[in-house]
Figure (cartoon, rainbow, N blue to C red):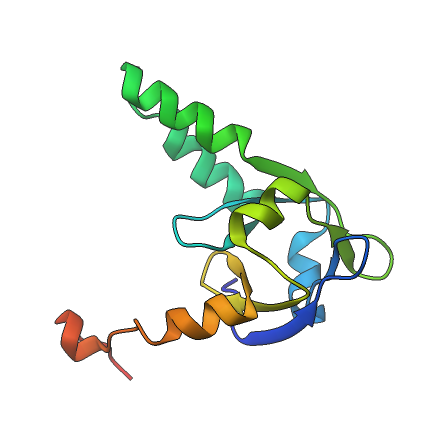
Length: 139
């Protein structure tokens, strides 16, 4: 299953966030939220997280990779949806992604991303088309 689409939501006063209904079935039994390379958060289903985690665990054991692995796993959090389809975002992750009240949730294939609305709108100006990236997309 690929996560698709863009949704506008809000963090409530208790830092809870609604997950789009279309995504919820794929998050049953828990999911993982972690820092992304961009100023946003990634959400992986448990099955997808296991694939990503396995890649990270298989990196070499040199000092620089050990530090990367440590940072990668310490900044991830396991979560579950409540009965209303919400979960609480940890304060450290909110701070990292600069999340304010208004957020954008967008599908990104095997995961979805959570962005602060303003940050996301700024980032959209940096998107390059397939021609600029010299890739061919078949429609």
